[in-house]
Length: 277
Image (cartoon, rainbow, N blue to C red; front, top):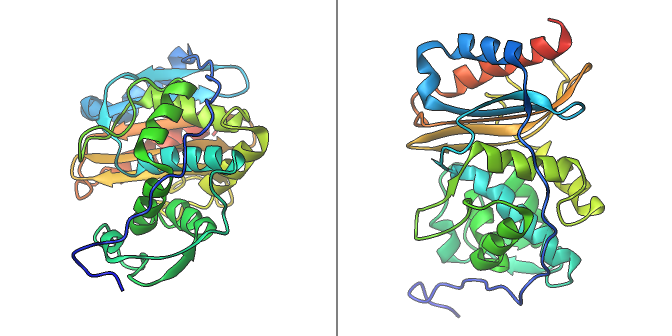
C-alpha cells in the first residue's frame, strides 16, 4: 500500500503525433464594434485584452491581442487538446480507471472536486475538468498526457507563447486563445470528430457569470473561464441568431475584484451589436 510520503502520480505513455498548424488570422477591423467596446470599457481599458471575431465574415476587433496573461484555468483547454490527440493515437483510452491519490487532492481549490480514493475513468476526469473546472481532475489528466506533450501540441497548432514553463508559470494571450477556439470550431484541432467533442465539452462549462451571464436565456455558448489572483478570464464561441462569433476577454483583475461583471456587460453589448439589439 502506498504511503503518503510517496504519492502516486501518472505519467504519459508516449509521444503523440504532430498536429497540423491552424492558419489563424486576427479579425478585419470593425470600427463601429471597436468604438462600442471602448465605450463600455471606459477608464478600465488597461485591464483588458480582447479578440472578437465574426466567424462568418472574419470581421471584429482586437485590443492588446498579444499581451501575455496568466492563463489560470484556460490551461484546461490545452490539456483537453492533447488528451484528444493521444486518444486518437491510441496512447490513452477514455475507459482507463484510476484511484485518486493524495498527491492530486492537494490541487483541490473548490468544494465538490474529486477526493482522495475516488475511482475515476479518464472520460469522467475530462468531463469534470471541463464542466466543473475541477482542479484535481485537471492535474490528474495533465500528468497522464504530460506537460511536455501539451506544449508540443500547442506549438504544432500555432500557439507560440502559451504553455507550461517553470512551476506556476502559464502564460497565454488573447490571440492564441482565439486561435485554439477557432481551430476547434473549424474542426482543425486534432480531427473533425475530436473538435466536435471538444466543442461540446466547452458547452458544459458551469461557471456562467461572464460571457453567458447577461445573454438571452437559451443562448448557446461554448466557453472556458479562468480565475486567479491576477486573472479573471472568459473565452468562447457564442451561437447567436444573427452571428456565430468568437469572444476572448482576458483581464488582470483578481478573482475577488469583480472582474466578471465588466466581462458580462461587454458580452451583452457585443451580442446586441451582432443581433440588432
